[in-house]
Length: 399
Ligand SMILES: [Zn+2]
Ligand SMILES: [Zn+2]
Image (tube, rainbow, N blue to C red; front, side, top):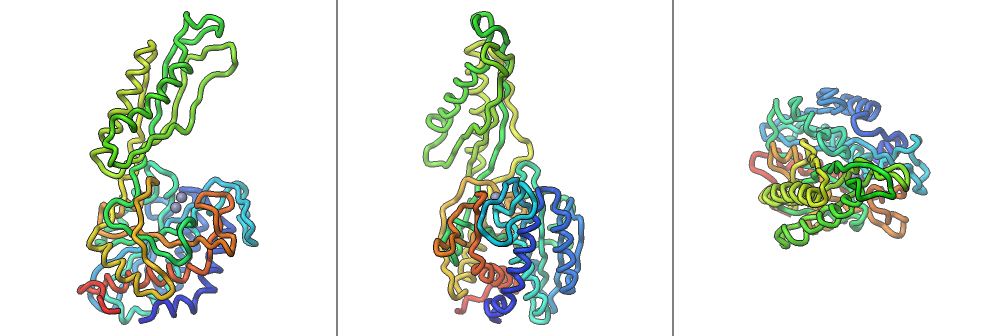
């Protein structure tokens, strides 16, 4: 089976689908047209489709002729609230919305893989499940969780799950893999600092929440610098500060919005506790009060199963024209983590950085641009993983 050769044959179609999606991005939870396109295309391939799974999610089920395992392949479908300024001819037609994280390429690559696999139904062991999920970028509840709650990983129960992400900072054609933790738990929090407002000329009669907020912001970096084991990755960022209306009014309240990122549950728990303690303690020092609230539904750490990932790397190494590199973990969050809590699997990257084509801007940039020549590699890799892991004996080791 030469899935790369077959992916090359349908390359124009993969690119066409990608560009059509790129022109019509939809925000998290609103992937209505996108999921319709996905579901229609899967159905046209003879794949059994369930629509509206956990919202706008789509699940396709392709049963092979031979017995085997159930392998799920996942693509996320949402765009971002970014106004596109890239120089491509198929720029977003939706004002202020852009596929700036490449989820359009994920959909196109997975639909390509669905096409290749459906052609090989007779040789296919087991069942392939295609998971098209909404709202990866949303954070918090996200799109994977409602799909799982709606049964996406059951009937038939998934044995392995794989997800691919395009990465604009990695060289074109390079796969990035890593066993163990690969993406962080992104815990969002809000600190509400309750002071006592008054006149700007008489601060002694007030409790100035802006002044206190400044101390809290500085002190919170101490959680990272002095309270967390330095060999464990941890970062804390305050990304928004809100307070006040006018220079001579001391307001009643200031709010801070922040995020912490960790790669293991122990550090995560400790960091959350310390953030709350420090914020409350600093506020108390100055007579203010802090209300600290963490997002309850934050994404877990994305953990790749080591054994599965090793096998994935060996499959990827067989794709001519690509390279496989072991990568460092990143502190971004991914709700593919939720699927990995239900079945062993691997979240891996495909590089699309190509300076000769001007594809140098990072994911989430308004100039984000993908080297479309790599899409065939992504399609081939997904098809190969489904095909090989569906086999009850597992991926073949020969080259
Ligand atoms: Zn993103
Ligand atoms: Zn993304």
